[in-house]
Image (cartoon, rainbow, N blue to C red; front, side, top):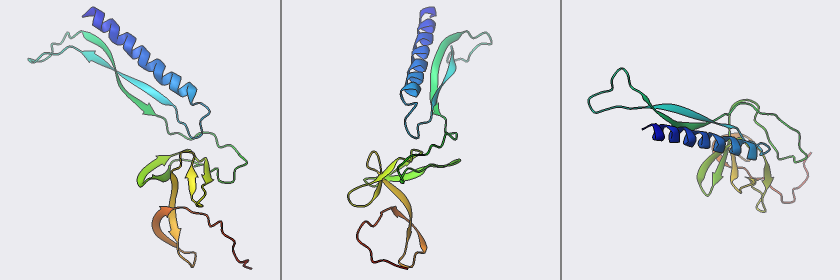
Length: 151
């Protein structure tokens, strides 16, 4: 029992190092939010109930949580780089599946849709011919065809 308690501590430390390594590897990734390992005690129990003098059996990784706090907003030379000031996410559509991200690195694909680096399309409220917002959510597209000039 003592050996398994010690092994649980080594496994927990290894999990913590994995989370820290991921944070370091992604430190400069656009929209990345740091993770934190959370641990829990392991106690011995029996079918008849635990006694008042239960000895711990080590530690386990209870979960890995993400920090979604406000990060730094930096200027870029890409006019489609967006940032969220405060809480919230960008909504994306990837082959019909809904995704959320705080990474605002966007570009225009060859069909004129605003897409993420992974190719998912940015979602937004559509407008009608009169320029009024319809409330209908859809892929945002920039018309890149030649347009007649307007005053």
